[in-house]
Length: 290
Length: 318
Image (tube, rainbow over all chains, first blue to last red; front, side, top):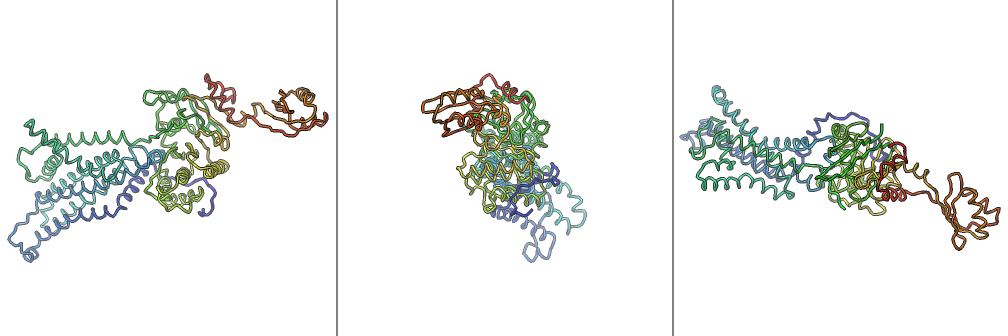
C-alpha cells in the first residue's frame, strides 16, 4: 500500500520465527553501538597491536626482511609467550571497547523507559538481555579471538607444517581465553550499564569495576597476609588463566599464582551477581503516577 | 469466547492486593477501563500482557492464558503505555520499524508498515526526526503508531490522551474511532477521563480499589436507565402536568412554568407536544438527556458493596 493512503489495514502476511526476535534486538543493538564515530576510532585503535604483531610474525619468518630492518641477530620466537602477550593486549583493549559500547546498547532504552514497550512484544527479559549480549559479544570478538586466531593462522602459514600442529594448544588457549574474557566483560558491562543512567559514568564504572576490586584485594592480602585477596584481582586472575590455557611460562612468581578452580569460581560468582543485577533492573515496570 | 476473560484474578504486589477477585468476560469492540487513580487499571493491563503473575485465578486474552501463553498473546497485541516509553535516540520510522520487527514482521515489510503507520497517525512529515525531539502529542502518536504497525488483534491504550491539548486530544479520539470503525482490531482503552471512554467505547469495566465496580455495555445501560426531560412552559402548567402524569411520567413542577420529567421508554417528546397543543400550553424549551456514563460511573463509585453484583444485573453476562 502506498504511504499516501492513510487508511489503516490489518497485516495478514507471514511472521518470522519467535527465536529470530533475539537477533532483531542484537542487530539493532549492534547498529546503535557502531553508529558512533568513537566506536569506530576505538576499534581501529584496538587493531593497532594486531598490526604490530603481524609485522613481528612477518619478520620472524622472513630473514631478508629481518636483515633489512637490522634485526638479524635478534631472536623472534613465535611461541606461547608471544601469543600470551597478544591475547592480554587485545583483551584489555576489548575492555576499553566494551566500556564504551555496553552503555550505548542499554542506557538509551532505560533512559527513555523503553522497556515496557520493548517487552510488550513477543520477547522475554532473557531474550532482551541475550540479544544485547550477542551484539556486545560479537563486537568484542572482532578485536579478540578473531584477530588472535588470524595471527595464529598467519604464523602457521609460512612456518614448516609441524609448527601449527604442535602448537594447537595456543590456538585453543587464544579461543577459549578470549571467549571467557569477553563473555565476562559483556555481562559485566550490560549489568553495570543497566544500573547507571549516564553513559559516560557507566563507561567509568565498568573500568573501575575491574580495577578497583584489585586494589581492595591487595589491601586484603596485605592485612591478612594471604594470597587469596588475589581473587578480587581480575587482571591477575585472568593472566593466570590465559597462561595456563596457552601453556606459556608463568608471568609471575608463586606469590601471584591462584588455582584455576578458584579463578573459575570467582568468575562464575561475578557473573551470577551480574545476572542478579540484570534481573532486578530489566523489567517492564510502569511508573504509575497519582 | 470473549476478548478478555477474567476468572477470580487476584494480583498482589509488594504484599498489597492490587487486583482483588476480578471476574468477568469482556466482549466489546472497544472496551473502556475506567477507575480513579490507583484503582488497578494499569496493573490489569500489565497482567493481561503477562508482566504480573496472578496470585489467584486466571486472565485470558482471546482464550489464551495471559501468563503461560504470553509470547503468543504479545504477538497479537499492540500496547501503548501510559508514560513516555520510546527510544529517543532513534528516528520515528526506525523506532516503529524496530517494534514491528520485534512483533515478527520481516524487515522490509516492517519498514513499509512503519511508514504507513506514521502517516496514518499523522506523523508522516516528521518520521525521520529523532523521537526525543517530538512534542508530547507526537510522542503519544508515535506510541500509537508502533502499537498499530504490526496489525494487532487487540490494541491496548493506557491513558491515550494523557497530557494532550484539546486539539491533539480530539485528533487522538478521532483516530481511535477510525480504528474501531475499521473493525479488525479490538480496543481496550484505559482512562480516568469519562469523556474519552464515552466517545470511543461500547463496553466499560469500572474498577475501584482493585475490584470490579461495574461491567456493562454502555448503550444497553443507558437504555435500561431512565431518561430525563426539562420543559419550560407557558400556560396551564398544572393541568398539563396532570395530563402527562397520566402517560406514566414522573413529574415535578417549579416556578416559572418549569417542569422536570422522568419519562418511560415508550413516551416520546412528540406525545408531550400533542398534549400541550390540546391544552393550549406553549412549550418554549425542551431538554432531554439519557443517563450519561458519568451517572453510571458515579453510581458504581457509590456502590461499595458491589460490585460484581451490579455488573451481573446490568448485563446478565458476568
